[in-house]
Structure formats: structure tokens, C-alpha cells
Image (cartoon, rainbow, N blue to C red; front, side, top):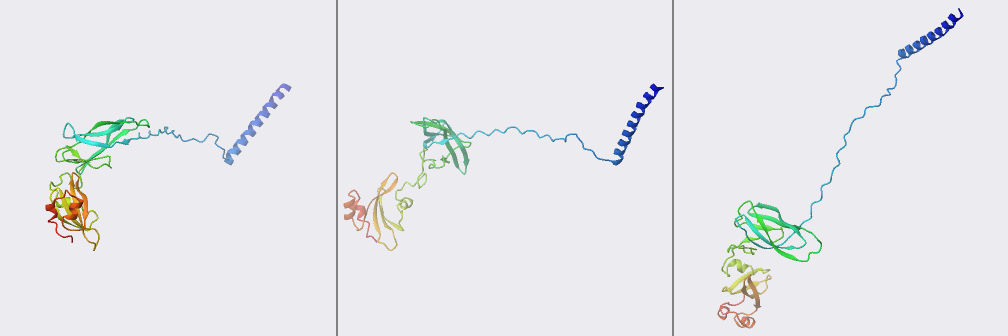
Length: 251
């Protein structure tokens, strides 16, 4: 009988504990007490951007001056004559464009060693999209334009264009002697000699100037202040007497 009481008491105690815990749990539910969510907050995935590689800087270039131009093997090519530094490499044409009857191009090299000891003559071929014909060629921007001359060769045209008048006494040739003068008046011209009365300043007396023909045009020789042949022949004995006798007075 005593053993049975020992067994009943623990059982009663356990039942009491369970009943008490159930009552507490029911009270918590009835109170609707919030509880913290212990799960970690989700994180958004941000993919890593690939490492960007900076582009290599462009290789430095140097322009090469042109010493001559000649016709190439066909109607769309020219051979550009240059003197290349011995320290340069990869001579080539860059920036070739064709517009408004003008061909634009640059001749460049990649510089090498710092000390260039020699310039080596060379030719670089330029090839265009359309036939070259009589189009103007502009190289390296700052150089004088190249044009096909009347004899078929290539050169720099002067102020009178590529086909200047053959007559040395033509008005456009005489006009080249004007300079700063406000007025010029031709007194005589015979292909070798030109005499011009020039007025350089308002209300100033005219000055008689003699010119000799040279391949580049009329070149000033001397000036005189008196009419006739005496002063002219004293300063320029080769001048034509027949010409100076016809000059008339200086205005």
C-alpha cells in the first residue's frame, strides 16, 4: 500500500506540472504577444562587375614633310617623296579624305630612338578611291598644296595659279608689283623689262621703278626720280635705251 502511494504522488506532481504549463501556454496565446523572428533577413545578390581594363594609349606619331610628288603606276596613285628619320618606323598614310576636288592626307611615322642621326630618302605610295586627274593634293595640313602642272609634273602653284599667262606684261603679272602702293601705272614693258610709276602715299610724288624679269616674276632693280634715260642707264646700263626714251615724264 505504501508503494502504491509512492507511485501516485510523483504522478500527481507531473500531472500538475503539465496542467500548469498548458495553462501558461494558453495564456500566452490569448494575449497574442508578438515574438521576434530569429531568421536572418534575406540579402539581395549583387553580381560583381568585371574588372575594367583601361585601353592602351594611342601610339605617338610624327608627320613627315614631303619633298616631292610624282605620278604613280596608275591614275589613282601618287608616289610621295620624303626624307625619313632613321630612328622612325612604319611610314604610312593616315587621314586620307577626298572632297571638293581636293585630296587630303598625312604622312606619319612612329618615332623610335630619341637621337635621329640621318634622314633617308624614301617614297610612299598614296592610293585614292577616284582617279586623281587634276585634283589638288594637301599633305600634312600646313604644307603648300600640290597641283599637276601644265607639263604633267607635280609642284606648288604660285599666286597666279597653275597655268599663269605666258605674257610677262599681262595685267595680273604687273599687279604683283603693287605691294603697298595706292596706285601703279605701267610706263613700259617688253617681256624683259618693266617700268612702273607708283604712288605710295596720298598726295606724294610718284616714283619710277624698274623691274627685271626672273623665273619667279618681276624683280625690282632700282628707282629713279627723273625722266628720260640718263638716270636709268647710270643705275642700270643694261636697260634698253629705246625703251627709256619712250617713258615720258613722271607725274
